[in-house]
Length: 228
Image (cartoon, rainbow, N blue to C red; front, side, top):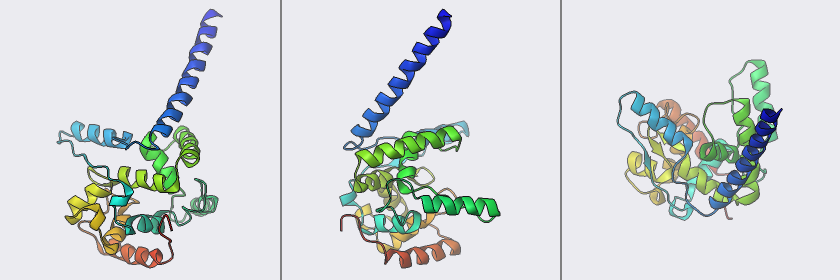
């Protein structure tokens, strides 16, 4: 009986500690740069386990120092209702579920807000536990951060190639220029890799990637820049 009471107390304090630290982290990242993400650490461990040198190119830059076309390109590619929803696009989720049920190509229903929550606070492998935590952190960042801040964190933290994280790193390594000087075509090509940046390359794009780039550039005409 005493053991159960002790266990109950430990669990209660663990829950309180989790909520307190998670809220503090979200509030802190409203202003502070995100120095490293769980995915960056996981990829580094995977590289070491294969006997490879660690590849982690990541340099935080404010959204003002990125090309104005980059947020537009990723919204066009990943989440066209980003400025309208509050973290969850239920239409996209329903379409994704319908496709799974019918056996068609599986499409993700995650918004940019959900992807940001996962990238910054959680691990990549999907499970019901992670999905639940992802929803929790998505609600938190939508409540605490502006849409511009969510986009800034997303563009600085997301994987954009093998050992490449964020807009500045991919701009320097794949295009030989800072993120502020990326062209509209460069940004569309980067956005085209995001479903699978380890498979698709913005430096050496395949014909499929070039087709995706063209489609994204057409969609960009209908997306309003953040802040307008």
